Amino acid sequence: MIDILVYLFATYQDFGSRPKSRTLKRALSAVGFEDAAISTALLWLDGLNTAAVVELPGNDRALRVYRVEEQRKLGSDGLGFIASLEAAGLLRPALRELAVERAMLLGDEPVPLAKFKIIVLMVLWCQEQNIEPLVVEELLDDGDTRLLH
Image (cartoon, rainbow, N blue to C red; front, side):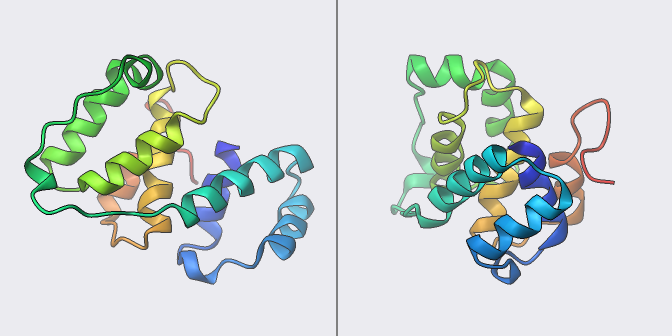
């Protein structure tokens, strides 16, 4: 699924320019992705696209306490990464919540940092946030290799 999300970001850098689901399924299949993975990725992406992002006044000063399940799922790497993005002003609280919610849907426990970075990238992409090129580089870097060539 993560490979499909990276491919979509690389191919349709403007989220609004991507084709509708049926056309996108055919395009992804033609590139060589398997039908089950395509369906899973598009369902996950649709859920992200339809999620309500609610900005609450003063929310940027609130302390976020993670549930035990969230701590296990995100692991110390994911939690640290969220904290660094928030401290740098790159991830607003509402988008953080969306990233956590989307990560909770993955089967990994904990979610590897490289996958979590892609989740954050997808959240920013779907919400049509301006993402600095250096931030994109960091989000696409899995520590060993760059996910997008």
